[in-house]
Image (cartoon, rainbow, N blue to C red; front, top):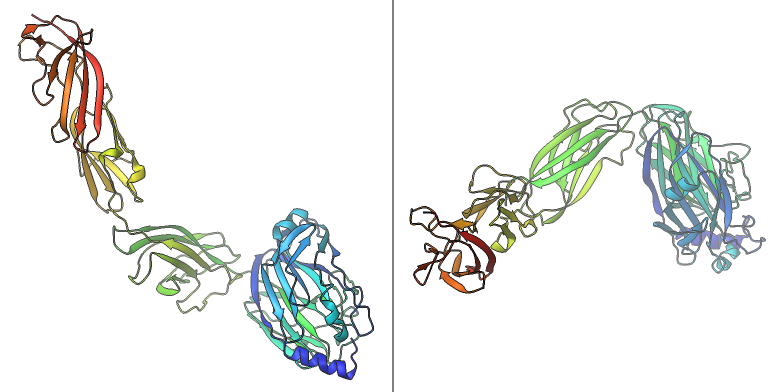
Length: 580
Protein backbone atom coordinates (compact mmCIF):
# COMPACT_ATOMS: atom_id res chain seq x y z
CA UNK A 1 0.00 0.00 0.00
CA UNK A 2 1.26 3.49 -0.84
CA UNK A 3 1.03 5.96 2.02
CA UNK A 4 1.24 9.74 1.98
CA UNK A 5 3.89 11.10 4.38
CA UNK A 6 1.45 11.92 7.20
CA UNK A 7 -0.32 8.59 7.03
CA UNK A 8 3.03 6.85 6.69
CA UNK A 9 4.27 8.46 9.94
CA UNK A 10 1.06 7.54 11.79
CA UNK A 11 1.26 3.97 10.58
CA UNK A 12 4.88 3.69 11.66
CA UNK A 13 4.08 5.00 15.14
CA UNK A 14 1.18 2.62 15.57
CA UNK A 15 3.14 -0.38 14.44
CA UNK A 16 6.15 0.65 16.49
CA UNK A 17 4.21 0.18 19.74
CA UNK A 18 2.93 -3.32 18.95
CA UNK A 19 3.65 -6.18 21.32
CA UNK A 20 4.14 -9.65 19.82
CA UNK A 21 4.21 -13.35 20.70
CA UNK A 22 7.48 -15.03 19.71
CA UNK A 23 7.45 -17.64 16.97
CA UNK A 24 8.13 -20.95 18.76
CA UNK A 25 7.83 -24.66 18.04
CA UNK A 26 4.22 -25.82 18.52
CA UNK A 27 4.23 -29.40 17.25
CA UNK A 28 6.46 -31.91 15.56
CA UNK A 29 5.81 -34.98 13.40
CA UNK A 30 8.13 -37.73 12.22
CA UNK A 31 6.95 -40.29 9.72
CA UNK A 32 6.39 -40.59 6.01
CA UNK A 33 4.76 -37.17 6.04
CA UNK A 34 4.59 -33.87 4.18
CA UNK A 35 2.52 -30.69 4.53
CA UNK A 36 0.35 -28.33 2.50
CA UNK A 37 -1.73 -25.22 3.19
CA UNK A 38 -5.10 -23.96 2.04
CA UNK A 39 -6.92 -20.75 2.87
CA UNK A 40 -8.38 -17.53 1.55
CA UNK A 41 -8.68 -13.84 2.21
CA UNK A 42 -11.76 -11.89 3.29
CA UNK A 43 -10.54 -8.75 1.52
CA UNK A 44 -12.25 -8.05 -1.80
CA UNK A 45 -9.14 -6.24 -3.04
CA UNK A 46 -5.75 -5.28 -1.73
CA UNK A 47 -6.16 -2.68 1.01
CA UNK A 48 -4.87 0.84 0.49
CA UNK A 49 -5.78 4.49 0.70
CA UNK A 50 -7.92 4.47 -2.45
CA UNK A 51 -9.66 1.10 -2.07
CA UNK A 52 -13.14 0.50 -0.71
CA UNK A 53 -13.52 -0.07 3.02
CA UNK A 54 -15.36 -3.39 2.85
CA UNK A 55 -14.70 -6.95 3.90
CA UNK A 56 -16.36 -10.33 3.53
CA UNK A 57 -17.49 -12.55 6.42
CA UNK A 58 -16.76 -15.84 4.62
CA UNK A 59 -14.62 -17.32 1.86
CA UNK A 60 -13.85 -20.72 0.39
CA UNK A 61 -10.75 -22.75 -0.47
CA UNK A 62 -10.27 -26.26 -1.88
CA UNK A 63 -8.11 -29.12 -0.62
CA UNK A 64 -6.83 -31.52 -3.26
CA UNK A 65 -4.91 -34.50 -1.92
CA UNK A 66 -3.23 -37.19 -4.00
CA UNK A 67 -4.17 -40.87 -3.93
CA UNK A 68 -2.61 -42.49 -0.88
CA UNK A 69 -2.46 -39.27 1.14
CA UNK A 70 -3.85 -39.65 4.66
CA UNK A 71 -4.49 -36.61 6.85
CA UNK A 72 -2.52 -36.73 10.10
CA UNK A 73 -3.25 -33.27 11.55
CA UNK A 74 -4.98 -30.08 10.46
CA UNK A 75 -4.58 -26.69 12.18
CA UNK A 76 -6.85 -23.73 11.44
CA UNK A 77 -5.58 -20.15 11.78
CA UNK A 78 -7.70 -17.07 11.23
CA UNK A 79 -6.66 -13.43 11.63
CA UNK A 80 -7.67 -9.85 11.04
CA UNK A 81 -7.78 -6.28 12.20
CA UNK A 82 -9.09 -5.59 15.68
CA UNK A 83 -8.93 -7.33 19.06
CA UNK A 84 -10.39 -10.56 17.77
CA UNK A 85 -13.35 -12.64 16.67
CA UNK A 86 -12.65 -15.99 18.30
CA UNK A 87 -15.73 -17.98 17.25
CA UNK A 88 -16.19 -18.86 13.58
CA UNK A 89 -17.60 -21.73 11.52
CA UNK A 90 -15.85 -24.13 9.17
CA UNK A 91 -18.28 -25.85 6.79
CA UNK A 92 -21.09 -24.85 9.16
CA UNK A 93 -19.41 -26.38 12.23
CA UNK A 94 -18.73 -23.96 15.08
CA UNK A 95 -15.04 -23.46 15.82
CA UNK A 96 -13.88 -21.75 19.03
CA UNK A 97 -10.30 -20.54 19.33
CA UNK A 98 -8.08 -22.79 21.44
CA UNK A 99 -5.16 -20.34 21.38
CA UNK A 100 -5.03 -16.66 20.50
CA UNK A 101 -2.32 -14.23 19.44
CA UNK A 102 -2.48 -10.44 19.66
CA UNK A 103 -0.44 -7.54 18.36
CA UNK A 104 -1.58 -4.74 20.64
CA UNK A 105 -1.00 -1.01 20.61
CA UNK A 106 -2.66 1.98 22.19
CA UNK A 107 -4.43 2.71 18.91
CA UNK A 108 -4.78 -0.33 16.65
CA UNK A 109 -4.79 -4.04 17.42
CA UNK A 110 -4.39 -7.13 15.26
CA UNK A 111 -5.21 -10.72 16.15
CA UNK A 112 -4.81 -14.31 15.13
CA UNK A 113 -6.56 -17.42 16.44
CA UNK A 114 -5.87 -21.17 16.33
CA UNK A 115 -7.98 -24.34 16.50
CA UNK A 116 -7.17 -27.99 15.93
CA UNK A 117 -9.61 -29.14 13.21
CA UNK A 118 -8.00 -32.52 12.54
CA UNK A 119 -11.15 -34.60 13.07
CA UNK A 120 -13.24 -32.43 10.79
CA UNK A 121 -10.69 -32.33 7.97
CA UNK A 122 -10.06 -36.07 8.26
CA UNK A 123 -13.80 -36.66 7.88
CA UNK A 124 -14.08 -34.43 4.80
CA UNK A 125 -10.73 -34.98 3.09
CA UNK A 126 -10.37 -33.46 -0.35
CA UNK A 127 -13.08 -30.94 -1.11
CA UNK A 128 -14.23 -27.40 -0.48
CA UNK A 129 -13.80 -25.67 2.88
CA UNK A 130 -15.73 -22.52 3.74
CA UNK A 131 -14.79 -20.41 6.74
CA UNK A 132 -17.67 -18.15 7.77
CA UNK A 133 -18.89 -15.89 10.58
CA UNK A 134 -15.56 -14.09 10.83
CA UNK A 135 -17.24 -10.70 11.07
CA UNK A 136 -14.92 -7.67 11.06
CA UNK A 137 -17.33 -5.27 9.33
CA UNK A 138 -17.69 -3.04 12.38
CA UNK A 139 -13.96 -3.08 13.10
CA UNK A 140 -12.22 -2.19 9.86
CA UNK A 141 -13.48 1.41 9.40
CA UNK A 142 -10.86 2.50 11.94
CA UNK A 143 -8.17 0.67 9.95
CA UNK A 144 -9.01 1.73 6.40
CA UNK A 145 -7.47 5.23 6.67
CA UNK A 146 -4.10 3.58 7.31
CA UNK A 147 -4.64 0.80 4.78
CA UNK A 148 -4.44 -1.79 7.57
CA UNK A 149 -7.85 -3.42 7.16
CA UNK A 150 -7.66 -7.16 6.48
CA UNK A 151 -9.04 -10.59 7.39
CA UNK A 152 -8.31 -14.16 6.30
CA UNK A 153 -7.85 -17.80 7.25
CA UNK A 154 -5.65 -20.80 6.51
CA UNK A 155 -5.40 -24.50 7.36
CA UNK A 156 -2.00 -26.17 7.70
CA UNK A 157 -2.40 -29.85 6.84
CA UNK A 158 0.10 -32.61 7.67
CA UNK A 159 -0.49 -35.77 5.65
CA UNK A 160 1.20 -39.16 5.33
CA UNK A 161 1.83 -41.35 2.31
CA UNK A 162 3.69 -44.67 2.15
CA UNK A 163 5.56 -43.46 -0.93
CA UNK A 164 7.17 -40.57 0.98
CA UNK A 165 10.57 -40.76 2.69
CA UNK A 166 10.71 -40.41 6.48
CA UNK A 167 10.45 -36.68 7.15
CA UNK A 168 10.33 -34.42 10.17
CA UNK A 169 7.63 -31.74 10.08
CA UNK A 170 8.00 -28.86 12.54
CA UNK A 171 5.19 -26.34 12.99
CA UNK A 172 6.20 -23.06 14.62
CA UNK A 173 3.74 -20.28 15.43
CA UNK A 174 3.27 -16.99 17.25
CA UNK A 175 2.65 -13.49 15.92
CA UNK A 176 5.57 -11.19 15.09
CA UNK A 177 5.70 -8.22 12.76
CA UNK A 178 7.99 -6.05 10.62
CA UNK A 179 7.33 -2.52 9.43
CA UNK A 180 9.03 0.78 8.69
CA UNK A 181 9.80 1.26 12.37
CA UNK A 182 10.81 -2.37 13.00
CA UNK A 183 12.48 -3.29 9.74
CA UNK A 184 13.61 -6.82 10.51
CA UNK A 185 13.00 -9.82 12.75
CA UNK A 186 15.37 -12.77 13.15
CA UNK A 187 14.00 -16.12 14.31
CA UNK A 188 15.95 -19.26 15.12
CA UNK A 189 14.10 -22.46 14.25
CA UNK A 190 15.31 -25.08 16.73
CA UNK A 191 14.68 -28.83 17.03
CA UNK A 192 15.64 -29.61 13.45
CA UNK A 193 17.30 -32.94 12.69
CA UNK A 194 18.64 -32.87 9.15
CA UNK A 195 19.69 -36.35 8.04
CA UNK A 196 19.36 -35.58 4.32
CA UNK A 197 18.61 -32.17 2.83
CA UNK A 198 17.02 -33.55 -0.35
CA UNK A 199 13.58 -31.98 -1.02
CA UNK A 200 13.73 -29.93 2.19
CA UNK A 201 11.24 -27.09 2.20
CA UNK A 202 9.86 -24.31 4.38
CA UNK A 203 6.39 -22.77 4.42
CA UNK A 204 5.14 -19.40 5.70
CA UNK A 205 1.75 -18.08 6.77
CA UNK A 206 1.86 -14.27 6.85
CA UNK A 207 -0.76 -11.52 6.99
CA UNK A 208 -1.12 -7.99 5.58
CA UNK A 209 1.60 -8.10 2.89
CA UNK A 210 1.01 -5.80 -0.11
CA UNK A 211 1.97 -6.25 -3.75
CA UNK A 212 2.66 -2.53 -4.30
CA UNK A 213 4.64 -1.83 -1.15
CA UNK A 214 7.86 -3.85 -1.25
CA UNK A 215 10.58 -1.37 -0.36
CA UNK A 216 13.51 -3.16 1.30
CA UNK A 217 11.59 -6.42 1.47
CA UNK A 218 13.39 -9.77 1.72
CA UNK A 219 13.16 -13.24 3.27
CA UNK A 220 16.27 -15.29 4.05
CA UNK A 221 17.23 -18.59 5.64
CA UNK A 222 20.76 -19.03 6.96
CA UNK A 223 21.68 -15.85 5.05
CA UNK A 224 20.32 -17.14 1.72
CA UNK A 225 17.57 -15.15 -0.01
CA UNK A 226 14.36 -17.10 -0.62
CA UNK A 227 12.48 -16.47 -3.83
CA UNK A 228 10.03 -18.27 -6.05
CA UNK A 229 9.70 -16.25 -9.27
CA UNK A 230 7.57 -15.18 -10.93
CA UNK A 231 5.03 -15.70 -8.10
CA UNK A 232 7.35 -14.43 -5.34
CA UNK A 233 10.05 -12.08 -6.71
CA UNK A 234 13.27 -11.75 -4.76
CA UNK A 235 12.31 -8.32 -3.42
CA UNK A 236 8.54 -8.85 -3.01
CA UNK A 237 7.79 -12.21 -1.45
CA UNK A 238 4.92 -10.97 0.76
CA UNK A 239 2.59 -10.06 -2.09
CA UNK A 240 -0.74 -11.85 -1.56
CA UNK A 241 0.11 -15.18 -3.17
CA UNK A 242 -0.41 -18.90 -2.61
CA UNK A 243 2.52 -20.87 -4.03
CA UNK A 244 0.76 -24.17 -3.17
CA UNK A 245 -1.90 -23.37 -5.77
CA UNK A 246 -0.29 -20.62 -7.87
CA UNK A 247 -2.92 -18.04 -6.88
CA UNK A 248 -1.96 -14.36 -6.88
CA UNK A 249 -5.18 -12.80 -5.53
CA UNK A 250 -4.84 -13.72 -1.86
CA UNK A 251 -5.17 -10.08 -0.90
CA UNK A 252 -3.13 -9.16 2.20
CA UNK A 253 -2.13 -12.70 3.15
CA UNK A 254 0.46 -15.19 1.90
CA UNK A 255 0.62 -18.99 1.85
CA UNK A 256 4.04 -19.70 0.39
CA UNK A 257 6.69 -22.38 0.44
CA UNK A 258 10.30 -22.49 -0.73
CA UNK A 259 12.70 -25.33 -1.40
CA UNK A 260 15.69 -25.03 0.94
CA UNK A 261 17.75 -28.13 0.17
CA UNK A 262 20.66 -25.90 -0.91
CA UNK A 263 20.43 -23.73 2.21
CA UNK A 264 20.66 -26.32 5.00
CA UNK A 265 23.27 -28.97 5.67
CA UNK A 266 23.19 -32.56 6.86
CA UNK A 267 23.58 -32.54 10.63
CA UNK A 268 21.94 -29.14 11.15
CA UNK A 269 19.80 -28.89 14.26
CA UNK A 270 18.59 -25.32 13.68
CA UNK A 271 18.10 -22.71 11.00
CA UNK A 272 17.85 -18.92 11.11
CA UNK A 273 15.25 -16.99 9.14
CA UNK A 274 15.13 -13.22 8.74
CA UNK A 275 12.29 -11.05 7.45
CA UNK A 276 12.96 -7.48 6.28
CA UNK A 277 10.78 -4.60 5.16
CA UNK A 278 11.51 -0.89 5.04
CA UNK A 279 7.84 0.07 4.76
CA UNK A 280 5.29 -2.73 4.35
CA UNK A 281 3.62 -3.93 7.56
CA UNK A 282 3.82 -7.75 7.61
CA UNK A 283 2.79 -10.20 10.36
CA UNK A 284 4.34 -13.67 10.54
CA UNK A 285 1.93 -16.21 12.09
CA UNK A 286 3.39 -19.64 11.31
CA UNK A 287 6.47 -21.33 9.85
CA UNK A 288 6.51 -24.99 8.78
CA UNK A 289 9.65 -26.98 7.94
CA UNK A 290 10.09 -30.35 6.29
CA UNK A 291 13.45 -32.16 6.41
CA UNK A 292 14.44 -35.78 5.95
CA UNK A 293 15.01 -37.16 9.45
CA UNK A 294 15.41 -40.89 9.92
CA UNK A 295 16.13 -40.88 13.65
CA UNK A 296 15.10 -42.78 16.78
CA UNK A 297 12.20 -41.46 18.82
CA UNK A 298 11.88 -42.42 22.49
CA UNK A 299 8.58 -42.24 24.36
CA UNK A 300 7.42 -43.23 27.85
CA UNK A 301 4.48 -45.53 28.62
CA UNK A 302 3.41 -45.73 32.28
CA UNK A 303 2.02 -49.17 33.13
CA UNK A 304 1.29 -48.93 36.83
CA UNK A 305 1.92 -47.03 40.04
CA UNK A 306 1.36 -48.61 43.44
CA UNK A 307 2.63 -48.41 47.03
CA UNK A 308 5.31 -50.96 47.81
CA UNK A 309 4.99 -51.28 51.61
CA UNK A 310 2.05 -50.37 53.82
CA UNK A 311 2.18 -46.85 55.28
CA UNK A 312 5.64 -46.16 53.88
CA UNK A 313 6.19 -43.42 51.30
CA UNK A 314 7.64 -45.75 48.72
CA UNK A 315 6.00 -46.65 45.45
CA UNK A 316 6.65 -49.07 42.63
CA UNK A 317 6.55 -47.51 39.16
CA UNK A 318 6.35 -49.80 36.16
CA UNK A 319 6.91 -48.17 32.77
CA UNK A 320 8.30 -48.81 29.30
CA UNK A 321 10.72 -46.82 27.16
CA UNK A 322 9.73 -47.43 23.54
CA UNK A 323 11.46 -46.47 20.31
CA UNK A 324 8.75 -45.34 17.87
CA UNK A 325 11.26 -43.79 15.46
CA UNK A 326 12.98 -45.09 12.36
CA UNK A 327 16.50 -45.69 13.65
CA UNK A 328 18.23 -47.41 16.57
CA UNK A 329 18.02 -45.93 20.07
CA UNK A 330 21.35 -46.69 21.75
CA UNK A 331 21.85 -47.80 25.39
CA UNK A 332 22.58 -45.33 28.19
CA UNK A 333 19.79 -42.99 27.18
CA UNK A 334 18.96 -41.09 30.40
CA UNK A 335 15.49 -41.26 31.95
CA UNK A 336 14.68 -38.73 34.67
CA UNK A 337 11.81 -38.92 37.14
CA UNK A 338 10.33 -35.75 38.63
CA UNK A 339 7.75 -35.16 41.34
CA UNK A 340 6.13 -31.74 41.04
CA UNK A 341 9.07 -30.70 38.82
CA UNK A 342 11.66 -31.73 41.42
CA UNK A 343 14.16 -34.34 40.22
CA UNK A 344 13.90 -37.61 42.16
CA UNK A 345 16.29 -39.84 40.24
CA UNK A 346 17.89 -40.44 36.85
CA UNK A 347 18.31 -43.93 35.42
CA UNK A 348 19.61 -45.17 32.07
CA UNK A 349 18.41 -47.57 29.40
CA UNK A 350 20.36 -50.82 29.13
CA UNK A 351 19.17 -52.23 25.80
CA UNK A 352 19.73 -51.35 22.18
CA UNK A 353 16.23 -50.57 20.96
CA UNK A 354 15.45 -51.08 17.32
CA UNK A 355 12.36 -49.35 15.89
CA UNK A 356 9.17 -50.54 17.65
CA UNK A 357 11.12 -52.20 20.49
CA UNK A 358 10.70 -51.40 24.19
CA UNK A 359 12.56 -51.80 27.47
CA UNK A 360 10.67 -52.29 30.73
CA UNK A 361 11.52 -50.58 34.01
CA UNK A 362 10.24 -51.44 37.45
CA UNK A 363 11.52 -48.84 39.90
CA UNK A 364 10.97 -48.23 43.61
CA UNK A 365 11.09 -44.53 44.44
CA UNK A 366 10.70 -42.71 47.73
CA UNK A 367 8.12 -39.97 48.00
CA UNK A 368 9.55 -37.08 50.05
CA UNK A 369 7.56 -36.15 53.14
CA UNK A 370 7.14 -32.66 51.75
CA UNK A 371 5.14 -33.99 48.78
CA UNK A 372 1.35 -33.72 49.27
CA UNK A 373 -1.05 -36.59 48.69
CA UNK A 374 -1.86 -35.29 45.19
CA UNK A 375 1.13 -34.63 42.96
CA UNK A 376 2.40 -34.83 39.39
CA UNK A 377 4.81 -37.62 38.53
CA UNK A 378 6.71 -36.88 35.32
CA UNK A 379 8.94 -39.39 33.55
CA UNK A 380 11.17 -37.84 30.90
CA UNK A 381 13.27 -39.93 28.53
CA UNK A 382 16.34 -38.35 26.94
CA UNK A 383 16.74 -36.01 29.91
CA UNK A 384 19.98 -35.94 31.91
CA UNK A 385 18.26 -34.52 34.99
CA UNK A 386 19.10 -30.94 34.10
CA UNK A 387 16.66 -30.68 31.23
CA UNK A 388 19.32 -31.45 28.62
CA UNK A 389 18.81 -33.84 25.71
CA UNK A 390 21.59 -36.28 24.84
CA UNK A 391 20.07 -38.00 21.78
CA UNK A 392 19.05 -36.59 18.42
CA UNK A 393 15.44 -37.68 17.94
CA UNK A 394 12.95 -37.21 15.16
CA UNK A 395 10.47 -35.76 17.65
CA UNK A 396 11.77 -33.87 20.66
CA UNK A 397 8.31 -32.98 22.00
CA UNK A 398 7.03 -36.42 23.04
CA UNK A 399 9.67 -37.41 25.63
CA UNK A 400 7.72 -36.36 28.69
CA UNK A 401 4.88 -38.23 30.38
CA UNK A 402 3.21 -36.33 33.24
CA UNK A 403 0.80 -38.33 35.37
CA UNK A 404 -1.52 -37.07 38.10
CA UNK A 405 -1.05 -39.28 41.17
CA UNK A 406 -3.19 -39.57 44.27
CA UNK A 407 -0.93 -41.22 46.81
CA UNK A 408 -3.05 -42.73 49.58
CA UNK A 409 -1.06 -44.51 52.24
CA UNK A 410 -2.53 -47.97 52.76
CA UNK A 411 -4.55 -48.72 55.85
CA UNK A 412 -5.75 -51.94 57.43
CA UNK A 413 -9.14 -53.00 56.10
CA UNK A 414 -12.27 -52.25 58.08
CA UNK A 415 -14.34 -55.39 58.80
CA UNK A 416 -17.39 -55.83 61.08
CA UNK A 417 -19.95 -58.56 61.63
CA UNK A 418 -22.39 -56.62 59.46
CA UNK A 419 -20.04 -57.27 56.50
CA UNK A 420 -20.33 -61.06 57.03
CA UNK A 421 -23.12 -63.15 55.54
CA UNK A 422 -23.53 -66.70 56.86
CA UNK A 423 -25.75 -69.27 55.23
CA UNK A 424 -25.93 -72.17 57.68
CA UNK A 425 -27.98 -75.24 58.59
CA UNK A 426 -27.48 -76.52 55.03
CA UNK A 427 -25.47 -79.24 53.35
CA UNK A 428 -23.12 -76.46 52.15
CA UNK A 429 -22.67 -73.86 54.86
CA UNK A 430 -21.07 -70.70 53.44
CA UNK A 431 -19.43 -67.57 54.83
CA UNK A 432 -19.13 -64.59 52.47
CA UNK A 433 -17.57 -61.15 52.99
CA UNK A 434 -18.92 -57.89 51.61
CA UNK A 435 -15.72 -56.25 50.31
CA UNK A 436 -17.26 -52.86 49.50
CA UNK A 437 -16.51 -51.60 53.02
CA UNK A 438 -13.03 -53.07 53.40
CA UNK A 439 -11.07 -50.17 51.98
CA UNK A 440 -9.03 -49.36 48.87
CA UNK A 441 -6.36 -52.04 49.26
CA UNK A 442 -5.85 -55.31 47.45
CA UNK A 443 -6.92 -58.07 49.84
CA UNK A 444 -6.95 -61.86 50.16
CA UNK A 445 -8.86 -64.13 52.55
CA UNK A 446 -8.36 -67.19 54.75
CA UNK A 447 -10.41 -69.13 57.30
CA UNK A 448 -8.97 -70.52 60.53
CA UNK A 449 -5.37 -70.09 59.29
CA UNK A 450 -3.61 -66.74 59.70
CA UNK A 451 -0.53 -67.67 57.71
CA UNK A 452 -1.61 -70.02 54.92
CA UNK A 453 -4.35 -71.00 52.50
CA UNK A 454 -5.27 -67.47 51.40
CA UNK A 455 -7.60 -67.02 48.44
CA UNK A 456 -8.75 -64.09 46.30
CA UNK A 457 -12.46 -64.93 46.50
CA UNK A 458 -14.19 -63.58 49.66
CA UNK A 459 -16.39 -66.67 50.17
CA UNK A 460 -15.88 -69.99 51.93
CA UNK A 461 -17.89 -73.15 51.20
CA UNK A 462 -18.67 -76.32 53.15
CA UNK A 463 -17.95 -74.66 56.47
CA UNK A 464 -18.53 -76.80 59.57
CA UNK A 465 -20.67 -75.59 62.47
CA UNK A 466 -19.01 -73.81 65.33
CA UNK A 467 -16.71 -70.82 65.83
CA UNK A 468 -14.48 -69.80 62.92
CA UNK A 469 -11.93 -67.04 62.45
CA UNK A 470 -11.89 -65.10 59.18
CA UNK A 471 -8.56 -63.46 58.21
CA UNK A 472 -8.23 -60.58 55.73
CA UNK A 473 -4.68 -59.84 54.58
CA UNK A 474 -3.44 -56.92 52.47
CA UNK A 475 -1.42 -58.18 49.51
CA UNK A 476 1.05 -55.31 49.92
CA UNK A 477 2.02 -56.57 53.38
CA UNK A 478 0.00 -53.88 55.09
CA UNK A 479 -1.13 -56.38 57.71
CA UNK A 480 -3.85 -58.86 58.68
CA UNK A 481 -7.13 -58.38 60.52
CA UNK A 482 -9.40 -61.10 61.85
CA UNK A 483 -12.95 -61.55 63.03
CA UNK A 484 -14.69 -64.52 64.68
CA UNK A 485 -18.02 -65.81 63.45
CA UNK A 486 -20.33 -68.66 64.35
CA UNK A 487 -21.90 -71.13 61.98
CA UNK A 488 -25.02 -72.67 63.55
CA UNK A 489 -26.53 -76.02 62.68
CA UNK A 490 -29.81 -77.67 63.73
CA UNK A 491 -29.86 -81.51 63.73
CA UNK A 492 -32.44 -83.22 61.57
CA UNK A 493 -33.17 -85.83 64.24
CA UNK A 494 -32.15 -87.15 67.69
CA UNK A 495 -32.53 -90.50 69.53
CA UNK A 496 -33.22 -89.97 73.25
CA UNK A 497 -32.65 -93.59 74.43
CA UNK A 498 -29.97 -92.88 77.05
CA UNK A 499 -27.26 -94.72 75.14
CA UNK A 500 -24.96 -91.70 75.34
CA UNK A 501 -25.25 -90.93 71.63
CA UNK A 502 -27.49 -88.21 70.22
CA UNK A 503 -29.71 -88.22 73.29
CA UNK A 504 -30.45 -84.47 73.18
CA UNK A 505 -31.59 -82.07 70.50
CA UNK A 506 -29.97 -78.64 70.46
CA UNK A 507 -28.41 -76.13 68.09
CA UNK A 508 -24.78 -76.74 67.17
CA UNK A 509 -22.12 -74.05 67.20
CA UNK A 510 -23.58 -71.54 69.62
CA UNK A 511 -21.35 -69.57 71.96
CA UNK A 512 -22.36 -67.13 74.70
CA UNK A 513 -19.67 -64.69 73.57
CA UNK A 514 -21.64 -64.25 70.34
CA UNK A 515 -25.19 -64.73 71.55
CA UNK A 516 -25.77 -63.08 74.91
CA UNK A 517 -29.52 -63.65 75.11
CA UNK A 518 -31.11 -66.59 73.36
CA UNK A 519 -33.73 -69.29 73.60
CA UNK A 520 -35.09 -72.16 71.54
CA UNK A 521 -38.79 -73.10 71.60
CA UNK A 522 -39.95 -76.66 70.84
CA UNK A 523 -43.52 -77.20 69.51
CA UNK A 524 -45.71 -80.09 68.55
CA UNK A 525 -47.60 -80.06 65.29
CA UNK A 526 -50.48 -78.21 66.92
CA UNK A 527 -48.24 -75.35 68.02
CA UNK A 528 -48.17 -76.24 71.67
CA UNK A 529 -44.91 -75.28 73.40
CA UNK A 530 -43.33 -78.43 74.76
CA UNK A 531 -40.01 -77.05 75.95
CA UNK A 532 -37.87 -73.93 76.11
CA UNK A 533 -34.23 -74.87 76.06
CA UNK A 534 -31.04 -73.02 76.75
CA UNK A 535 -28.76 -73.50 73.70
CA UNK A 536 -25.72 -73.38 75.97
CA UNK A 537 -26.89 -76.48 77.94
CA UNK A 538 -27.55 -80.07 76.86
CA UNK A 539 -30.78 -79.40 75.04
CA UNK A 540 -34.17 -81.18 74.87
CA UNK A 541 -34.40 -84.80 76.02
CA UNK A 542 -37.77 -85.63 74.38
CA UNK A 543 -39.77 -85.37 77.64
CA UNK A 544 -42.82 -83.29 78.44
CA UNK A 545 -43.77 -82.98 82.08
CA UNK A 546 -41.44 -85.93 82.77
CA UNK A 547 -43.11 -88.20 80.22
CA UNK A 548 -41.66 -89.49 76.97
CA UNK A 549 -43.23 -88.02 73.88
CA UNK A 550 -43.93 -90.22 70.89
CA UNK A 551 -41.69 -90.70 67.89
CA UNK A 552 -42.71 -88.08 65.34
CA UNK A 553 -41.69 -84.68 63.90
CA UNK A 554 -41.42 -81.60 66.10
CA UNK A 555 -40.94 -77.94 65.31
CA UNK A 556 -38.60 -75.29 66.66
CA UNK A 557 -38.17 -71.55 66.55
CA UNK A 558 -35.06 -69.74 67.68
CA UNK A 559 -34.29 -66.12 68.38
CA UNK A 560 -30.66 -65.36 69.19
CA UNK A 561 -29.32 -61.95 70.14
CA UNK A 562 -25.76 -61.33 68.99
CA UNK A 563 -23.28 -59.41 71.10
CA UNK A 564 -23.60 -56.47 68.64
CA UNK A 565 -27.39 -56.37 69.20
CA UNK A 566 -28.42 -57.93 65.92
CA UNK A 567 -31.05 -60.67 65.90
CA UNK A 568 -30.68 -64.16 64.45
CA UNK A 569 -34.00 -65.96 63.82
CA UNK A 570 -34.68 -69.42 62.43
CA UNK A 571 -37.62 -71.87 62.29
CA UNK A 572 -37.62 -75.50 61.26
CA UNK A 573 -38.46 -79.04 62.20
CA UNK A 574 -36.71 -82.24 63.23
CA UNK A 575 -37.53 -85.87 64.01
CA UNK A 576 -37.63 -87.66 67.37
CA UNK A 577 -36.61 -91.30 66.82
CA UNK A 578 -37.14 -93.97 69.53
CA UNK A 579 -34.55 -96.71 69.39
CA UNK A 580 -34.62 -99.51 71.91
